[in-house]
Amino acid sequence: MNRKHYPAWLRRRRRGAADHGILDELANALCSGDEDAVRALLHPDVAAVIDSGGHLPTAPTPVMGREEAASELLRLMPSGTTTAAASINGVPGLTLVRDQRVVGALTAEVRSRLLVSVWIVCNPDKLRPWNR
Image (cartoon, rainbow, N blue to C red):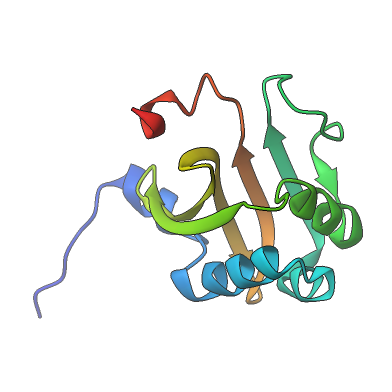
């Protein structure tokens, strides 16, 4: 049997990474503004880390718990914001796009088919490569 052996750093990065299926569900829930659908995708012990670099008024991070995390995720999706699937640091993720500019990059980790960790970078300084 031919088996691919990935380097240790790549195995660690892929273990627990969210797949495109659950990220598509999250994207649909975020774009429709459906807080119940967002909550349904989050683990009860979810931790959401939002790196805004002080450019956005966000709650202190990490945001803990399903209710608070869902609210913060939806606050990042004002009218006119869309999502697009993307590879972020080698794992499936989402970009948040507004006025044809990437305003956020989201990755997540899954446990028990629910999002247990969500990382969102909204810091414009860190998103410059996405907006060249």
